[in-house]
Length: 208
Length: 192
Image (tube, rainbow over all chains, first blue to last red; front, side, top):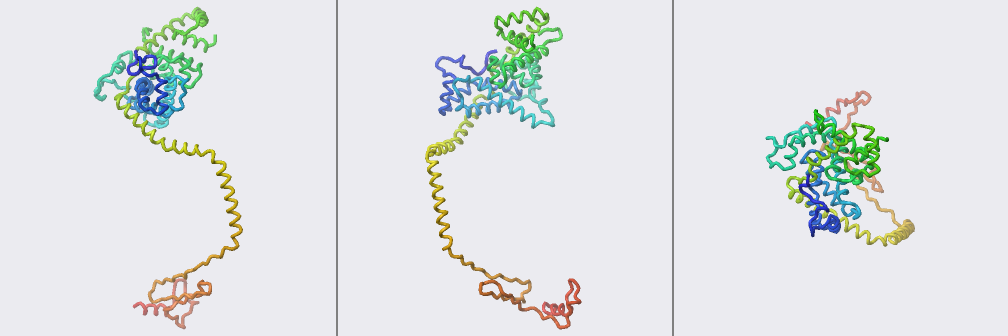
């Protein structure tokens, strides 16, 4: 599926500044350039966070946190690095901090994830009255539901590896950088996650 | 073959990333394991399904509000950072003066110490003025006169207004907490 909201450097139209040009302006305190950068990347960051934590409100807040951290860390960003990899590294840290904190907070308490919106059909009567977005329509498709359910069984590390590779199209080295792990770990996580998904998504007749 | 290498070959095959040499290695594995081809095809199919179903980018709800909120936080961050940066710059600008200023402070401290040592003998003993203590009684009929000595310390307190103790009072007979009858009688007269 083509990206819905944001474009990257590769998809820029003529005259549009590149990420690195925008970053240079940001580094000299240009907040307008930063807003352009945010508008360009917010969709990818939000999708990534949402796919990791499966909670719309928290994903919104965490995406804000990601970009605020990006703003604060921008003076240290070096031009030779790839912005998207750096951005996902920050996203990774924010999501894992949140997951860790949530694990501590909910230790020994009732697990409220069973009440999260992921377990409720998005067009059910109990959800807020909002127009059904195209991505939500897909979520409600039978295959979409199956994939979401299968993805939810993966560990955070395996899910993130799959999302970065299959959905965001990162190469192995970029995944290793974004997740701060070795290339070997990326390969083994990819193999394990794909194998598990393949088993879960195979129906009784053996069709994939 | 090492399992790690096999896994890597399979991952790369799914992603169309195999080199010619790796392709040959995988071919050998496929001959050895008849189920491997099916497994690989299934993995590739799963990859395609995920790419079809999960969007790479989804606009957050209320995207304009998202930007407004974020830019408000950015502005707050800028404002909070300004004074610190100014102070840092001012401090950095005076970095060259740190060493001479430190040396100067040491010399001044040494001279001040010497002067204090010389002048210590000439410092007169401070005159301490003492105030006499006050004496309070629960009964209005009692008074106290405080007599100071030459240095201003209390030398004696004279209490007036006490009733006389009768001659027949025997202190040896007084039990703990009990006063002589005559004394109690005198006290009763005074207050009634």
